[in-house]
Image (cartoon, rainbow, N blue to C red; front, side):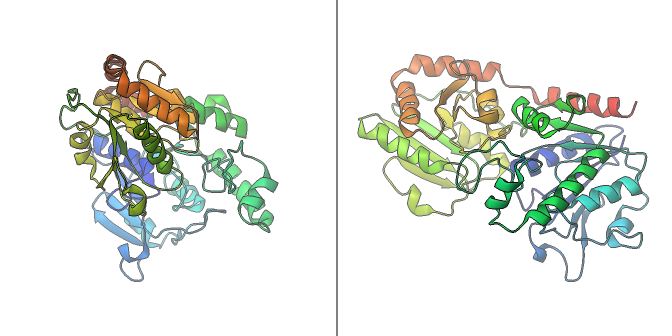
Length: 398
């Protein structure tokens, strides 16, 4: 079986959750007997990653980087899709049976339709990593005002985009409808995300729930620490949607009450000043293979995103390390963190609620140990998820 994985970015240049999910599946399957002819097609993160005048760059015989589309509303494609174009020539001679899309953002809807023309017998599968269908404003169901959104309101969407975009939104809707009809099936990494696409209009029989593939565990990070202070770890990107400022403020609230705890922040930072304060340590960016060593240094992993995150990989990775998770009672985070069993949930956006959970763990080490055992128990074996995807591929081809 030959699978072409299509992603909105290549993890060599962009290490977001969706890019890593696509790449990990590609890596897992191309090493399996019968899947050796699989490929990986991704949008470039910036124009300078491609030679001047080029639309396609072969990174290896089975990996291609393409010119990035900048059309986030109508999702146009930036490459020539004619039979004589660079991309068609690069893929000529291949015989993909499954085209597993992990996004159409930066890739373009026209490219997806072209792949169906070029490989008419292939089944098209789309893993939904966020809410770009119902939400044109950054795909987070989070309005420009910061309010959570249920999606699907053209007037509200136009306001988020600054107004005067109703024509583009109408074109977008037509293009998305055509895309949906072309896709054979959709994978949702969380039931919460599935519920949002059901509300948007995708039928239930076309939506299946399969968890994203986490990183391969490289060392045992489950051993409990013995230090006096509670060490809280944050892992991931640092942007305005991740709510890291809320974490920092909650640490200050707890420490001002005499609680002995610190926060270690792992990820690239655009605001170093935010992280320079008592009890806050910034460890900088990290490569995926460095995750396990850093996670071994903490007692609990915390996240405080202000949007409906779908299925953050850091939760499953924390469970693999036997680390409980503190997260807001929001979206896929509330689904993946079992309150009182694998971690603790706090009221979304509430600093005092988050600080209270930190204080509770710092003062109750028996609870922390119990949550750690629960986290380890709920870790999903990586091979089980690979097998689930393989069974799904086989079912699509019947």
